[in-house]
Image (cartoon, rainbow, N blue to C red; front, side, top):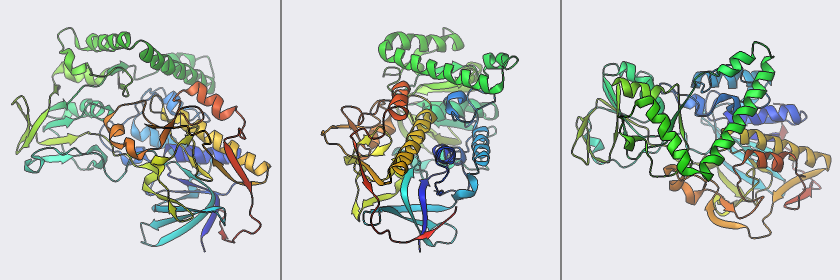
Length: 496
């Protein structure tokens, strides 16, 4: 007999814990469980253990709307974020509803039973377990946890030092006094270099092409002053609204005035490194916000570059050698350790194979509805955050919407809801087409399609999404609903 729940959540990371808390707050009668492959909550913040791991979004907008982030750190480190998630889960009694070490392999929608049948392997015992639910919600993010992206570097097998991907960081890595090369120019690379620089012999950031990098204060001084006269909850809400507004203004400004934004970003670099810096190391070939900007707290990256503890190279790799990396210029970078901060591999819904009445379902041929439901898939929610702002802003909105939908279905005695594209709104663009990052381009063909109009078009706009998901009616003509079947096949209910 399968374990049955009203709602099953896949993933106990930032999105999954948030979704569970929203269910507890807004749908208290729902029996739910979370299936998590790892042994602990946290998702990304439990997986990544490299030095300096931190958020790349400010914590006042990265934290949940319903639970204040009351620290003054702007870009929090990984352990602090994981603690915040753990405390949130405890506050809403979520942790006891998590089934750890469950690797979900497949989920099939059974139209006759009007439920999802989910197959998972218990990683401790090897047993295959079956769960069923009326509503399935994916909170697995968008990348593969088992392996990161590694380009086919010539000669890498010749290298006699250590080669490490940040996604599989060894706990006992000793880099004291070593020559280290970090390959990459994104958020991971700009975090690793200043975190490791004081302990290495020397560390070099080797990039094929630069990213936009800007400095922001590590501590929120304004909120610190406001705390002297206002309650913490008020300060959090004011800081959150301020930072959301600033994010939107910066993004809109970059899109409308890209050349001016580019000048301001390079001016910020010049301010920290002086007039003698080589601008080519910080001048990308793309426009601001074609890819995510990289924030560095209190200019920490610029400080280690200016001090000489670290250096930066913008060049192509010709080949790895026994003792380092030879560039196409002929120069060789000596290395005891090479860290390949070369990005992620996209994986949707945690690699779960979806099917409808046994027929395989190809997500790349489907649209998303309001960025939360998947066209043609009954009773399936997809919590997917922003790529141009704090992830949690959209995850919170999506969870709110799904609770609204579930309550609407209960109030009207409805069992099934499914989004239908009756207008032929599909385009050949993917849902993450607003960015041209390498990992997105590599996976464009496997992601759901972008629609040409709302609600099939992904907006990446907090103000519009907030109205779309929280204020517009649930029954808007794009969803098909059906009532409960005359007879339901019994299953073993769980009180979890």
